Every structure is written in structure tokens, then in C-alpha cells.
Amino acid sequence: MEKEIYIIRHGETALNAAGIVQGRGINSDLNDVGRAQAEAFYQHYKHVAFNKLYTSTLKRTHQTTKGFIDAGLAWEQLAGLDELAWGEWEGKSATDESRAAFRDMVEQWQSGNYDAKFNGGESPAEVQVRLQEAMDYICSKPDELRVLICMHGRAMRLLFCMLTGKPLSDMVDFPHLNTTLYRFKYKYGKFEVVEFNNTDHLK
Image (tube, rainbow, N blue to C red):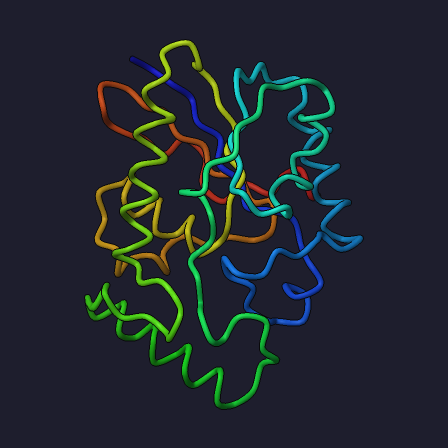
């Protein structure tokens, strides 16, 4: 089976603009910039013959792909595509303490401790399980030859490591601006990156 898979990050939210972590537990709306990014993406890619749209269960992904939904594209929400839960730090203002905590956590992940997580949060290993379930489901649909996925920055980084066979510690190798596009070819169970961090629609 062959598929073409477009994966984008959601548009900007007020918390993104303020440098505040949202995570799985903060169900925020797009701000004006995010809505403009979403419209720019739709105008640039509305001609693409997608068979299906998949989003997370968080409304910032729904709002980012509203143009496609309103145009009648078949749409399904998968909780497996939700953002990593940052637990006790979600929605908190950025401080020296929080920045230090995040630096320490990312360093643990980069050193291979994929079970590390904040109180009330999720680890990369836990997110990997649900991401794999979501992708197995998406890839099992033989009639969906070209799909669009809208999800979240940290979860995207983990997913791209999985799809490219990299260790999760390489997640920093995948930049993820709001509405950035990564495009993959899926064939015989393998994924190939065709477009990397494409933001041409924002120019």
C-alpha cells in the first residue's frame, strides 16, 4: 500500500505567542495570527485532493484545518495525535524556574531517558505508544491515499523520529513553526520524507 501523508502543526495561539507551554491539558484557541496562518495554509493547499483529514482532539488543530472541514473533507479526531502532557507546568508563565525545569527534562530525554516526565504529565515513551496506534490506524485505510494530519509540536517531533527510524533523543532535529508542513511517502511499511519544515504558504 502507498500513501502520501501531509503533517502540519496547528496555528499560533496566545500561549504560543507568550512562550507558555500548553500541552495536552490546555485546550486553547488560535489567536488572530494563528487564524491567518490557517487560512494561508488552506489557500495554498486547497487544490490537493486529500481523501481524509485527521486531527488531535484539541480545538487548535480543528481551527487550523477549518477551511478543509468547511469544504467537506472527511474528518476524524484521534486522541493519539494529542500533544504531550506537560503536567504541572501546563499554562504556567515562563520563569527562570520553569525554563530550568524544561531544560533539565529535555536533557534527560536527549540522554535517552524516555520515561522521564513531569508530575501529572506524559513521558516520550508513553506518547510513542499512542502515536504508534494512531499511525497504524491511519495507515490501515487502503482507500485513503492522500491524508492531511494536524497535530502538535512536541508530539510531531516524537512522531518524526519514529517515522524516520531515529532515536527519540533526536527530536530536536525537527523544527516545528506554527503550520509548518512535513510531507511523507509511505510505501511497503516505510516512510520517506519528501518535504521538510515547509512554510512556503506563509511567505
